[in-house]
Image 1 (cartoon, rainbow, N blue to C red):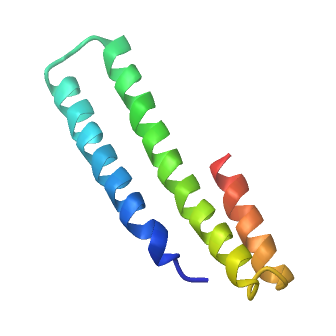
Image 2 (image 1 turned 135 degrees about the horizontal axis):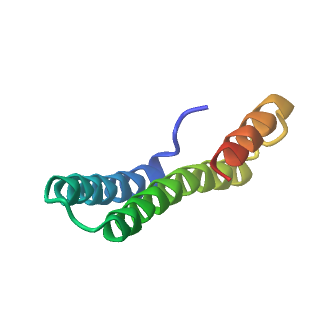
Amino acid sequence: MRVNPAATREVINRLRRAEGQLRGVIAMLEAERECADVVTQLAAVSRALDRAGFRLLSGQLRHCLATGSEVEDDHTVERLEKLFLSLA
């Protein structure tokens, strides 16, 4: 099961945004910022990563449903389900 190319650009953009947020968190720690501020930014990074994962899976599910080719394969459906639950 390959990544759906239609979702790739959006996911890459989300990950780059999260990468910038993570660099910001590191800078906050180095600057000895308040714990609450750091944790707030860490939570934002975590949400950004989760959204990227869900978008990736969403694109794959849409692709499977549109083509119908992989939907009937129980093994593929189980894999998608496990991936979804790993993000939940």
